[in-house]
Amino acid sequence: MRSTMTPYEGPYEGYVYAYPHKTAYRPLDPRPALGEVWAGERAGALYVHIPFCEMRCGFCNLFTRTGAPEGLTGAYLDALERQARAVRAALDEPRFTTAAFGGGTPTYLDPWELTRLFDLTEHAMGVDLRDIPLSVETSPATATPDRLAVLAERGASRISIGVQSFVDAEARAAVRPQKRAEVDAALDAIRASGIATLNIDLIYGIDGQTPDSWRGSLDTALTWKPEELYLYPLYVRPLTGLGRQSGEQGRAWDDQRMELYRLGRDQLLDAGYEQVSMRMFRLPDSAASTDYCCQTDGMVGLGCGARSYTSTLHHSFEYAVGARHVRAIIDDYVRRDDFGMANVGFALDEEERRRRHLIQSLLRTEGLSRDLYRSRFGTDVLGDFPLLDRFPGWLTADASAVRPTPDGLAHSDAIGPALFSPRVRALMEGYAAC
Image (cartoon, rainbow, N blue to C red; front, side):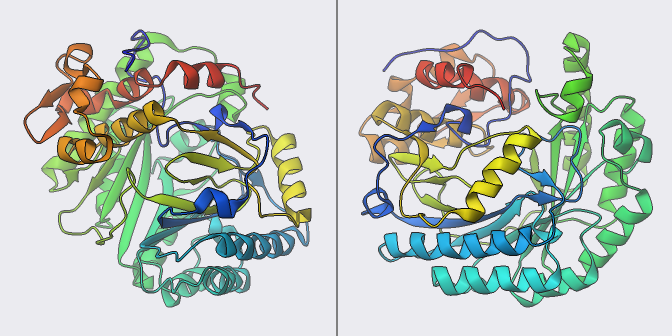
């Protein structure tokens, strides 16, 4: 196993929410049939992507478009149903243990469209979403009582809302034109809906944010007693609103974000939350139980911005951030009839499978189970990857696990990218952003 690591350039190299990133995907030639891709694979998670938002935040690099001309959301749901039926036909006996509707903003859809989204997902995929944990993303402008009533009635167990800041001036600085009154009304409506788990997303590192204003946003969030909070460092990425306005901000910004991270972490720990990862904090005993294991189980993604993955192939449709290219991909998706093949993706060889398992495990508080790794790959992780030598002070190991230290968790956005393979880094660097 090759021991490779990129040089350390700072604590905020990049957020690793999946490995490999979609910028490492390439057109598959030949395109494999989904029945071949999923043969013998366990599809434990179901993800449905809705690529519409009422606005585009300045920090957003997700696959989404602002608004939709008349008829487009209906056409998108038609295509989603066609895709779902084709995917279901390719699966052996799916036993989904968790599900999520993400985006974009799923609650951009009106109540009737949300009802249709639930119907087509359940009927086409053969799953009752009331029987498994279901998470749905929303926004302050779209978390309305009529939409939330549909989510609650159809089995949503968790709702995640991107607030980012309770300070109007900070929201404007992040190019998120929301008002505090709108945020408060949305959170009140979510709590009134009876959905069991509320997650609030907040961002630190916004221009003009101070330690006092950051503590104030955290204090305000805690008044709703959310079961979960995610604390995200602000990133300025190419082709986003902030990316077009800003250049490199240097070491001072790294220091500011690290200070705010530590303040937020300590404040939530003092408030009784447990830390799950660098970003995720939750109240003890509030997590829904699920048999899904991200290291070993596959995921079925529906929608033009969703990824699917098996043990050996990750696949999706084309990826873009720029508005013109995103719209073109959505337009192509709604006209598509052939959903029986994998189009764009990345094939994982044995080394990449080990790396993915390592990265998916190491960036969480509980760390990597050495027994689970050994049972999958027949070797010990420390023999394959000299982790303790490469990350002194950031990782610790005992007979059962390799875990991040508190300082290691704080540097998750450096550890994760440093573990990318040379092949993945070359593909990502060669991706033509659009």
